[in-house]
Image (cartoon, rainbow, N blue to C red; front, side, top):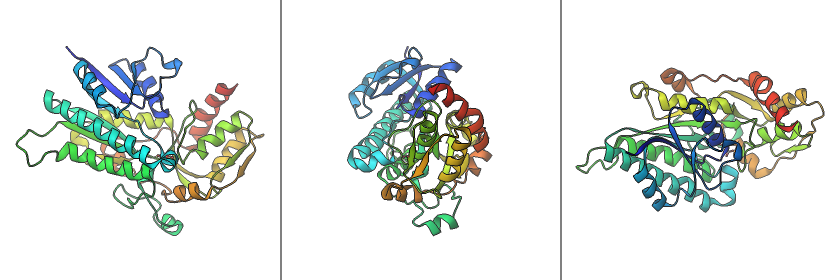
Amino acid sequence: MRKKTILITGAAGEVGQALVRKLHARNSHHLLTMDVRPLPPDLDGMSTHIVGDILDKSLFERLVSEFDFTHIFHLAALLSTRGELSPQAAHNVNVNGSLNMLQMAADQSEWKRERVVFIFPSSVAVYGMQSLENKAANPRPQEWEWNYPITMYGANKLYIETLGVYYSEHYKQLAEDEPTMLDFRCVRFPGLISAFTVPSGGTSDYGPEMIHAAAQGKPYASFVRPDTIIPFMAMPDAVKSLLLLAEAPAERLSRRVYNVTSFSITAQEMAERVQSHFPQAKITYRPHEKRQRIVDSWPVDMNDDAARRDWGWQPEYDADRTFDEYLVPNIRQRYA
Ligand code: SER
């Protein structure tokens, strides 16, 4: 019999590592992880890991013959700054790779006539606020408002949200076939901050970079202006939201795409918090015009009322707890 398995793509990334740890600690399912990179050694033994590319369809053919996926956390992606440096590569991974995953999940659910829960992290980058005045006037957009992304990454995420809904609700709608039992569910994240990993290739990275630099006694020049504001979330809350959504009873869900967020903060407020814990920190501002433009296009906050109402979403870490209880003690220990 094929093994009931949770598949995690992009497992060596920031969210992936945190999710693997959490799922391993629960010890409820066999975990199959995939990434183009090996997992870091401290995750050894927590999963069956495959170094492979989500663009490699023959790999999936092999995997579905061996494993029965009940849940797929499809995390692999190229982030927004990386995506602007190589838009075609980003499109390949973020769209073509995601399409492979959706198709594989749809085929599996159709074939075994069982639900496959497909969890997809989307992003604040699907928004495009068009001007700073507009950003100030519409600080907390709903899921369906201001969906005008200005990055390849944001456009890719928005498209896969749409495609996920299509595969779950309208796939092959004119054919005689039974509909699939793919159950696509998506959370849109704000900028994420982890105490244990540093991001690479994102545009919200000035937040985490600032604090990781301070803890190592390194000076940091922020690539955005001090007044720049976007929403952020601590990594444990990001993982919590993925798992809450994956476990929510289907009948409670009134939509397939949900905003989740925790606290909105300016770069300067972030720097002040870092400075209060690391008084030696040297934080300056050297805005990068183009990255600034990307962050300015993201909203101040996101309306996550639907997630709160439908599946009891609530962040555990506000700005105070994120810094005082999660980031600072863990980062201090990490660089001690
Ligand atoms: N953190 C991501 C980025 O900066 C946004 O989802 O690209």
